[in-house]
Length: 389
Image 1 (tube, rainbow, N blue to C red):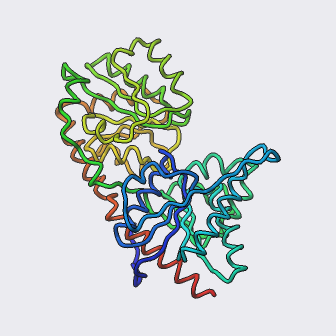
Image 2 (tube, one colour):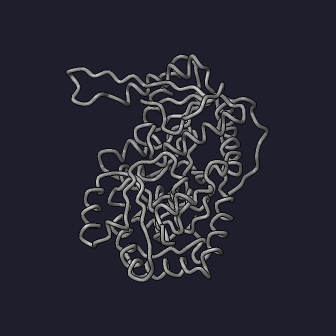
């Protein structure tokens, strides 16, 4: 997880392109930019709306909105073209040293177009692409996008992925010739930590019930139905409550499932929450039974709040969740095994140890540990680009 750090360029000017939403790639990109700004680097976000996590003022942070005009000729506005044009403008007039694009589609291809335009104007701008997950495992595999994804990755000056599993899957499914550097996702332990919210816990669990929590975008791949089924089984054995944070296409179906199982009185759908750490601070167990996760950022956020995790054993999750130490990792869809493991964690003889282990593991992914890896990688890519001119 570490590599030799070269002599650092001071006060780099970095353009970050990302989706500005609650999704993992947008969260990581925004938190990365904020961390870089605190180190003294000048960071320019380029996207179609202000990133959700870009929530404080800094003299080193800038936001450039991509103006997407709609014309009758176009059934869908050409965002990729507008984004490429905005990148050209920001690189040229802000004199950026580097473009870092998060999520391959369509950011990597737009960055390639911008790079070629700038080259005709005598400007060489290195581009780093970070692969986050579904841009490779789901969308990127679609035959409609695969050739462009492969080309854009290979034309990047640097490529990173958030887990070893995602790196392996990229090489397995795409004809990628670029070296991929694994730099894991990270957590800001100054923000994500267990807060004193005993009054909140008492309001939700007035009789000392155990509190289970799940956060996601409620897509099928998250298998929220397994969360509800596990809770249903746990609730048969011990008093428990369930909080579901997030929203998405599966929510209505999950609400119907709760009614069918008769668990509505003990289940709350909280919708999208910005201060999710306040909910995690009162949780006893975090559930992530996903069919696929390239890393599991939501689980890391829970661990930082001293919450043990019960997950599936797929994708990059086993790189985060140490089975039997920070929680347990079970086969996808094995509700009965998840129930047994949940009850084991929630046993008062075991729960304190699991909580302590979860926090200790989260500390290994603190932003202070991961940020230097990005800075070093930036420097390496910039130097290689300058040497090739």
